[in-house]
Amino acid sequence: MKHRNSHLLVGYWSRLRRGRDVPDQTDIDPRAVKRMLSYVFIIDAADPTRPVYRLAGTSVCERYGAELRGTNFFAHWEAQSRGALSLLLKQALATRQPLCLSSVAATADCAMVEIETVLAPIGFGEGAPTRFVGLMQITSDPSQLIGRPIAFERLVGSQIVREDEPLSTYDPPPPPPPPSIRPSLRSHPRAPHLRLVVSREKGATLHSEMDQSMMRLIEALDMMTAPPPALIRLR
Image (cartoon, rainbow, N blue to C red; front, top):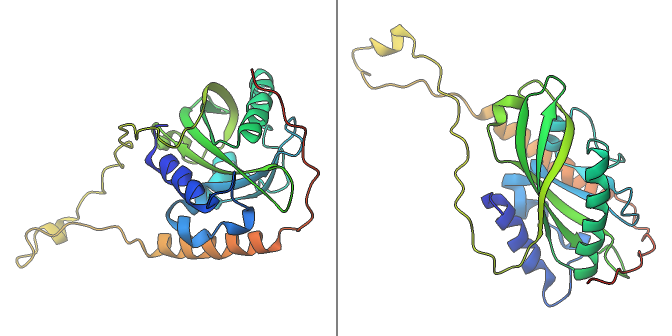
């Protein structure tokens, strides 16, 4: 895994287990992952050939340009990747271990980004686990997606995550340069070192609304347990 948030999600998932093979969906507290909550999602993989989003954070929906709840997780993946992903989902559910996916995504006009997606199996009621809590993170320049949703995604790598895996060194891309300082600020006699600071008030509001939205979605999920899939035999 490259992204620090991927390790944070796997660590949180591991703590929630408390001696069990996997945690239950009801154990997840949105406040515990609030800093990355907009990139968190849950999929139902009772049918690994057609996993469905149960809920998705606002940033994930923005990346794909649509509300994702109730849609097919494979909708934006190429056909060859879908077959491989279906087998990987089965393996992760059978081994009760998180799965890390590396992919390349492109917009309709061929702007490209690299994505790391972590899927950690969770239970939903009794029986074998059939769901995943996931996290999507862009590991290249995210500015390629400004105003352009992802139209196509291709799997380029995968691994079953072990909890003792060391944290790899990953530095996120630098933020865009700040806007130019206005002459009136720069020439102020009492503030020679003033810098223009972009207000974060709007961002804080979005996070607050997003946290409440995600909690409402989790509370609103139906509590009907899907029949567990047959476990595969690993070679």
